[in-house]
Length: 480
Image (tube, rainbow, N blue to C red; front, top):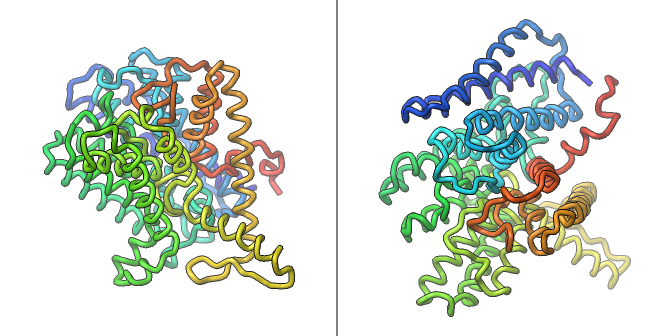
């Protein structure tokens, strides 16, 4: 274990976090809020800490997989602990545990909240909440990779440990250039969304923070009624479309921007993703037809909620707790599916779902014809057994963690639907669930134990399980 390099990257990361906190500080100053020091004190403290340790540079800059996983896990824990300070120091009635929950929910792009009345929060905290969604969407360490030393650093291990999906690679030869491309696409799409929301007469501040939460597929809203507050079919449609766009693998955008759009459209995962959205929207729209005035309204609400849930954003325009059980069941299933690998969305990922389905079909064919050799293919390329095995292990581990989480939540005397969907939406970074954790409801009434369980689930889900679990393995802490 190269501890000096781990510390070096974490020190840079702490300095970067301190600089990012200056943005909500500026918002606080602009709106003349008294809580500006809640951002100023942590930011200055972290900058001084980073400056005081600036001379501690590693001689060996090599990062292997073990260091990559450790850096990512520790960085997410650190940013969560730091990110909770503005909530706690702003004197808005939150304990540190509640503040930590809000911070973790923001950075992991889950969107669950312990705030009973979000509209009473200072503008600076509302900005910080949505900004954490935007930072966490692409990854809190991905941006830092652009300034890591390239010589023998092998920083691709850090990117692989943080980016979502069953496998992550570089778009171009250098990790630094890959990061620049990814963030360039991310920023451009966010700016376009802000402009479109402004065209829909959404206020400037609302447009910025809503775009942040949409781009990161985090779903932190600044109104108690979420997007339903605006009562605008245009705004709902724009946000619904962009939620889907941010749930698409960013590698495909790179292919499209480099005149390889035909290759992008050959993505099997893309068509599965769009197909699931289409079928789910039509099914729910038909099922809730009698709930609304006409087919257009049922399609409008069905499309938005399907887009929000499958991309694990968590915005709401309707209380789907009141929908028929068939529609609610579809939404719960979509919580597991999630978006595409390499996107800002959470969940299992469509690529893993495709591999699981094809793995099941191969097993059936093998039972019928034991001597036949069947290769699982994705995008026309055969997958080796290690990839298939990794996906199966990931899914099994996810189910085990989900079962233990539901068991622990049941100690809080929550009904089964509430406990189950709370765990599902946390570990898949969705946000709202059903019953007691449904849309338009706060989680402030949960016990400390339940909040800790959900915090763990959110972190495990965002980092796709293993980086967090590795922290509990003694072998990762050994020098050799």
